[in-house]
Image (cartoon, rainbow, N blue to C red; front, side, top):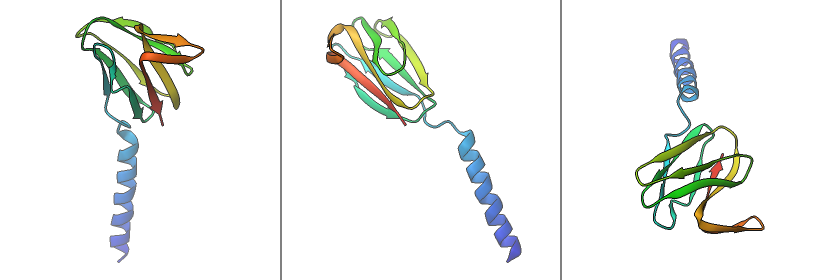
Length: 115
């Protein structure tokens, strides 16, 4: 009986340690389509890398909300990415295909929620 408890305890500790060593989530890809992001909204765990891939025309990935900075131009087939290490909501838009007025984005806009 004692040996069985020890084996269960050791197995549980090993599983917990392994869970801490694995990344929270694989990379998430957002495609910049001709006039929208696909998907426009994603929720990820902190430590996850988000990749924006140009799927049509030229776009920007420009931060406009949250405590972050990004302003990159991507063309079809090109990528840009960011590993989110802090929790929060991080909004982005394409400067070419959106408008921003009083902090409100219309057009090609999106957000990353990091838990």
